[in-house]
Image 1 (cartoon, one colour):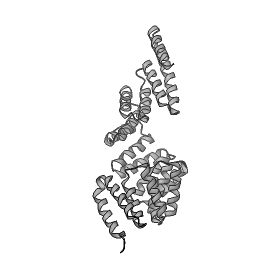
Image 2: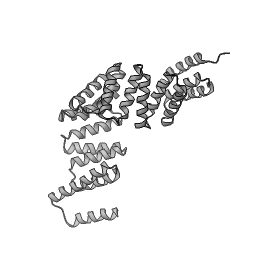
Image 3: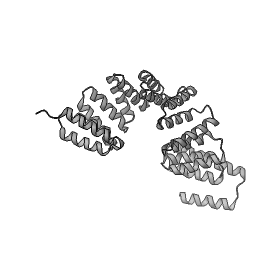
Image 4: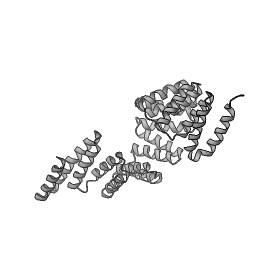
Length: 317
């Protein structure tokens, strides 16, 4: 049925050339249907409709932008970049096109290029909270934590209900040792969006660092309900349980983290520690061997740590 529709449209356009006004209206109708399909998760249908909209109006910049977003959601970063470039080429004042291209560049690991795009988006639209937020993430991923915190703060200044910005600023405040401020930020994020699993996770990290282990475990429990396939939730809850000497619970969490991310070296190390404490030396050795296999740049420090642990927990004769 779809094939017949496409053929009919082609024949109609050949037989009756549309006026510019008709073309614009036709493009808008397909664009609107594409947007509806995209909002419902029908990315293939949305892209097909954007394609038709662009045949009616090849200079429909926003259609390129939205098709780029749909392609990015499908994992087609290269196709998305082409669409963002087209949108910017047609209308270089679309701030959202720079911001979304920046996101695509970030996903591809080009953080410098992403920051340049976010800068341009902010230059065009100075009150663009999402662009500051996105630049904050790119600065964080580049290791520039102070700039990232400043960007999240600016996003919050523009939009005081930006829950994700509070959560991410909280994570960086935790990472830089500002534990109370981190907890406050994450609590604010949760108040704005009680379904934001990452905020519970980040507050759990801060509470662990602040010594509130029961509070941390409670936060990780909530995060696990909201983000059941996020391995770091289980890993960090395992660490908290390990601190409380709930070794069975800790081992279970590390195992779940490994199930979700089989190359998570730190989970193998910590499960190995638990197994050493429990006297399961053979199982611990296997975990340590696997940790080294996945250790990457951490292999040397991991080897030193494993030797230290084995000396500490070696069987007494």
